[in-house]
Image (cartoon, rainbow, N blue to C red; front, side):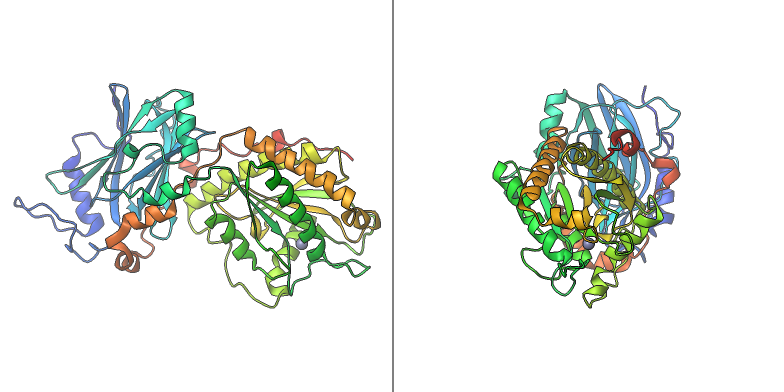
Length: 473
Ligand SMILES: [Zn+2]
């Protein structure tokens, strides 16, 4: 029995009227259909979505969007949790706030719920939580007599194996792209599907980081460690490695995040070593994951110190929190942080037995480098330069070999436990906008739809406390 999450199916006329209001379109009384061309003060702006409905018939569940104009849509799927991502050019979502929640109702076929919003400048996204493995079939676009555009996204359930393959490929099938969506960009990248890991050696160049009483710099210790960790991973042949710095050079914090995001990294590991000169007895390693709320004031102060790296190096990034400007991106970040915590748990399990951990070995704090919305990210403080015993270990080859070996094991466990997070090729999404590009962006401003966090949040991620059992030294 098909059901609608919002308007009755006979409501298309009302849709058209709403579109006229929302998009500033002029609805002609005669047969002239509304075109994509200039038709009002805002016609050059983003497409306006005024309804999103789901219905299931003959084993196919459709998510149908009612839009002010045609757009390119591109779909891919991801596993754990099972979901589909529909990438769109910027869409101004003017939907009923209940849309997509589907709470308190029977789930509709393949779709459990969905959420939507601006993903990046000029790009919107719909994330569909699936009830189980399902693929997106050919996306269809039709025009109503009133000039509205219906984009119908069909989902068909498949077996786990098929779904997994599609999620690893990231670009499930040619059918999943709208008819003219370019495919070339993702084809070239498909050559090497091994997970990509970004190793971030903290500080560098004009920023020494912490300084030991002996005059040893944090930047040098962590660089040596990061290099040997990267080599270790590379030797396995299972991963692609990228380092945020390959020598003693200053790299702004935002740039480190950008490197990971642009490489579409599957994991980001930042290496640091702390120092508390006032408490030389404090020692051991701590694993940090990102959070706006620090676990404790100590962690908050540490994050603040590390976040001052740019200023310490004589530059001022002037950037806000890593361009997380949109609530949907905030949601992606939250989801990603679930993966980050999962990896932190693996690290704890492997490192606990081979090295000394601090009294509270997993903590959270607002490190700037842990703010990639879409890259699971962890920062490890290897120990304290202010502790004599830690400093000795940090400079020992033997200790380093043991610890990087255990960290590599944690990485193996992390990636064997789930399919690689596959991402869409941003270049494809960009060129899908193609001809309507810059002029649109210039005029559309901040009109994009905003998701209500209390409504559409499907909180699949954080399992922190469950996944991470404290390890006592
Ligand atoms: Zn540091």
